[in-house]
Amino acid sequence: MIPFPASTPRGIALHTCSPLLLLLMIFVARLRLCNGIMNIAAWSINHSLFQRSPMMRCCCKSMAASIKQQHCRSSIFHYLNRWRAGAARSAATHSHVHQSILSNIHPQHLYHIVNNVDDYKDFLPYCHESKILQTSSCGTLMDAVLRVGLPGLSLSAGSNSVLEERYVSRVRMTPANEITPFWTIEAKSIQSSLFDSLKSRWQLSLIDDANVDGQQQTASPSCSVHFEVQIQVSNALISFTLDRVLKDVAKAQVEAFEKRCRAVPSFDNVSKKL
Image 1 (cartoon, rainbow, N blue to C red):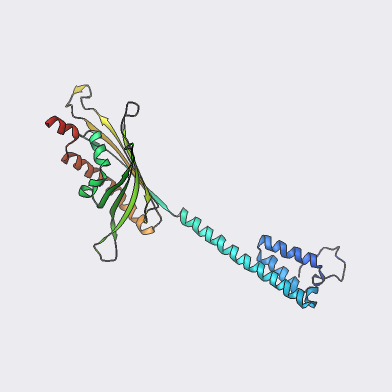
Image 2 (cartoon, helix red, strand yellow):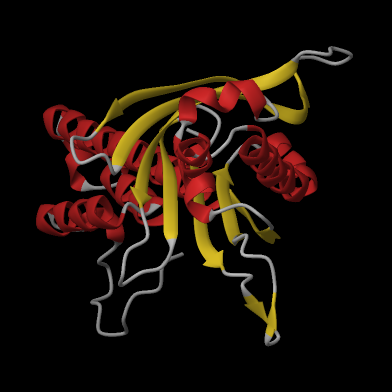
């Protein structure tokens, strides 16, 4: 039973409600999309004076069915949007910073090695394809594609084939100048199927070994390396694997670039020999 105010005249029941009140109840139910209110409205329609007119009864039933249909659609879109928002929030971010000092390597030499993306496939671990797609006229921006294997992940159980990802990155290169004594290379993925986001940043600075602790040393320069990588991924398996291998992968990459610098002479050394 639905309680009514004490001022309600005796003998007036819900089934004798006016048509205006019934339409108002339906309108409120349509706005609030509340199952409880819709049930009250439907019950009122079925027990109202409209039951005496087949045409009005059919009209009211159609209105009630339309309200329930719109409520169902709204609920579906509501939960779909909530699911999408939850999926976006579930993307995990993995990051690592590697710092080291490379003796007898000039930062400008390492800067050129890092910018030479076409040669990555020849020395970089897990890199199977590397190619510069385009370079800006100013020479400080380029798009490059890399195809890399993901260590610890295979295509299927018991398979030796490593899961690969081919993605495109936009790279910004900033050489050192009088104001900023750092060589910087920043890369950000712009097209990837497995990674939601992949960012990396190199910051190289010169360490002059000419005077250390007030004593004369060799004049060979050294390079201070600050390398950071950040990966955002929604795949739970890849996320779990990155937690275990990202630190080692970052260290292995810096070591591979160091070996490349020692194997490939810098432009300054070639000029001196000539």
